[in-house]
Structure formats: C-alpha cells, structure tokens
Image 1 (cartoon, rainbow, N blue to C red):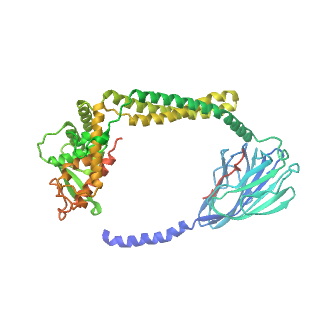
Image 2 (image 1 turned 30 degrees about the horizontal axis):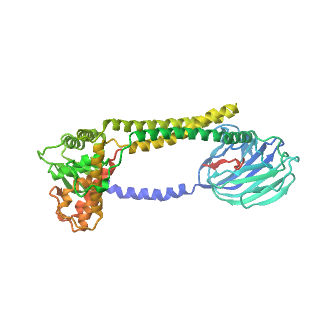
Image 3 (image 1 turned 45 degrees about the horizontal axis):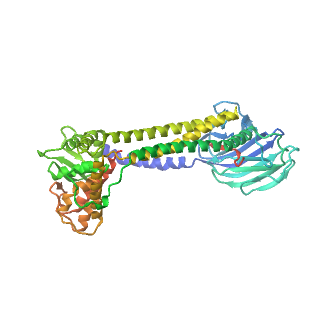
Length: 561
C-alpha cells in the first residue's frame, strides 16, 4: 500500500514546489521615490521630512520601517508619520505607527496585508545639533541611510535655510546629481541608487551664520580629542615604565636560571642514544604524539594488531585490536591501554584514540613524568616555576585587559565632569597596556623555560639529534636496509614522522608488511596500505596535542516586509 501511494505523493509534492516557490520568490519591492526635505532652523536644528514611495510586487507586505540614527547629532524628536496622506496614530496594530527608541529612532508603519500595489510613507522629525562648526558652518547629513535592501529609482533632497545663513557654495551630494535653486534653498536630484548605498548631503555656510554655537556632540568630541592628545604622553610614559619594570623582572629570572646550551652538533644521532621508550623520548622533547609511538611499540611486541577495514563510501579505516599476549608492560603502557580501551572492549577505531586519551591522559602522562624524575631528567622545582610563570602571565593578561578597558572608559567619563582627574585613569590605562605586553612576553618565556635538569638537557640534546636523523632520512634518497623500517618505526611515530618514514621505504620499493598489520583481502602485498595507516596515525597524534568632523550625521536603515 505504501509503495503504491509513494509515486503519486512525490508527484503532488513536486507540483506544489513548482507552484509555491515562484510565489515566494516573486515577493519584492523597490522605492520609486525617496525624497528628503531638510529645513534648517535658526538655532542650528533641522526639521526633516522623509517621503518614500514603495512599489510592492507580490507579497503580502504588512509593514515598512525607518531607523534613524542619532550619530553626530544632539538628539532626535519624532513629530508625526502618515501613510498615503493619512496621519497615523501611535500603536502596533494595522493603521498605526510604532515609534520606539532615540538612537536609533525607530518608526514602523503597520498596515493591512497588501500585494502588487504602491504606497507612500512619510515621517517628520526634528534633529538638534546638525550644524558643525569647522572652518565654515557645515552640514553633513545622510539623506539616504546606509542600510536599505531595496533600490531607489529617484531621490530628491531639498534643503532650505534661514536668510541669516550665508552659503559659501551650492550644496552637493556625494554622487552624480542635478541641482536647481529655490528661494532660500536648493533641490538636488539623483537617480538609480543601488541597494545599501548611502547618499550624503553637504552644505557649507559662512562661519557663525548658520548657528551661533557648535553642537554639544562636537564640543564633547573636541574636548575628548584634546584631552586624549594631552593624556597620550602620560599614558605612554606609564606604559613604558610598566614595560621596563616587567622586562627587567623577566630578564632577572632568566639570568638567574640560565644554562649553557649543550653542543649537540658533536653528538652522533643515527641511533637511539639510550634505552628510553618512544613515549619517554617524545615526552623529553615535548612531542604530543608519544602515545602513537607507544601504540606501534606495542604492535611490535604482539600486544596490539592493526586491521584495515572498509568504512563509509569505501573509505578505509583502521582499528586496533588487543591480543592475548602476556608481555610485560610498563606503567605508561598499561595506562594507555586502560585509557583507549573501555572495560571488556578489545577493539577500537584508531581515529578515537586521541579523544579517549584526552579525558584520561594522566594514566599515560604521570608514569612518564615519574620515570623522568627517576632518571634524574626532570627538575620538579623548575617544573613548578614554569607552571607558575605561565599562570602569572595568563592572570596578568586578563587583569591588564580589564584595567585598560576600565581606565579608558573611566577617563572618558571623568572628562565630562572634571578634566583634572582624567590623568589618573590615563596612567592606569597606560600601565595596563604595558602590563599586557609584559604578560605576552612572560607566557612566551614560560613556554621556553626548560623544566629539565642538566642531565635531562643533555639527554634531550641526544634525542633531538636522533629525531633530526629520522626526519632527514625520511626525506633522503638513500636506501636504508628494509629491517630499519620496523626498528625505528615507533620512534618515528612518536616524533610525528610516521607517514614520512613509511613513504621513504615505499619510494625505495617497500619493505615486508609487518606481521601485526592485517590489510584488506587482495592488498596483502601493498605497502601503500602501511603508508596510509602511518599517515593516519600522524593525524590522530596531532589532534591529541596538549594542549573633527570627518563623518556624517544621521543614517540608519530603511525597509519593508
């Protein structure tokens, strides 16, 4: 029954999609006109009337909106709004206008659902402090807001001004326009305005003729700029003092704990320098992939085996399987097996190893640290110092960021009431900035601060040479004996070189497939499968790492829906 109805149902769904999709896609609108009447008042404020004629195609549409930004003004006051020539009362129902906020001043016309028609929307408001005093009394006004998702066919911007205001030159728009004079004013017209493109009106008057006093926002801006210019040297000096003191503290600590570097160039590196396990060698060199070295060390001792399997979309995946071996295991090896195999489990996808180890890494790491202590390689006091340096650096960074933000905000707020108190917060902000730089340097120093003893440094130098040898051998064209592959495989994996090490032997003609590796049927002699599993091990190991007035006033947004 279900199968019989499936085909007709799919046909119905497809037909509905064909019918419904164009209906939704057809909903669109544009502004046939966006006109602005900008009437400058003797007190430097302006009465602004915006008229937008929207053409709605498809629909339905139920509202239009205008968000008017109060940027670089002394505030906005709503007067009234209308739709199709009818003034609208305040409210949120159809036939009403919703007015909220002050910056931005949000105006939303609500109307009954409408489609395929044209409507006119008008809003009137007063804007204070719109004339800025520069070398001339200047108006920069965003007649068309920077955010409007619709194109505008035509826009007319009309500016009028009192007879006392003396224009220096005719007003302009920041795009191509036509201009025509009016009594005490001009009308500027532009066409084909793309979506989200603003249009700025600029008018310049003889100084002191358009407004007697600068707007409050400009006075405050100039006050802050002047105070900032005066406070900058004080803040800079405070920051430099903090930087010098912090730098001296780090230098003193580094000098008190410095060591003469080991001359590693004279140390032979083509063989393991001692009997350390791959994981211990990786721990000594701070490699995060030591656990993969342990995995392949255990495969060579018949504790683990690797199986190649087919996953989704014929992708290959690799699983680890526990054997019944009774081989003696070290503490870190037992910890690793306990971390990656759940109780009663004998197989695990290799891609899950790092995830499982992340929550139980102490089972693997702590035995290695204890072995380093037992060998005399790890200095517990230096390890504590390193940890403390890192913590101090991190805390200092957070405190510095908080004090800098507090200092900047408080300095600005203090300027509004008392200029002579701002310097204190400027000093705090400057010292915080210097402290932030010191915190970064301290955290870098903590990372480079060796927690090893002198013996540990010497052992690390030997192992670093061996790791360098494996890296160079992996890249070289020199053919190595085939038994070298498995002899150093676990160390290559521990140093993140497993894929490169296997690829070297593949280029040289391959090596015998390890007995612990079980390839898919039909690929038993393909050494490329070993290359793939070793490259995958590198990825798994890496994911398990530890770890004045240049702007314009007004603006905002406009639209409908």
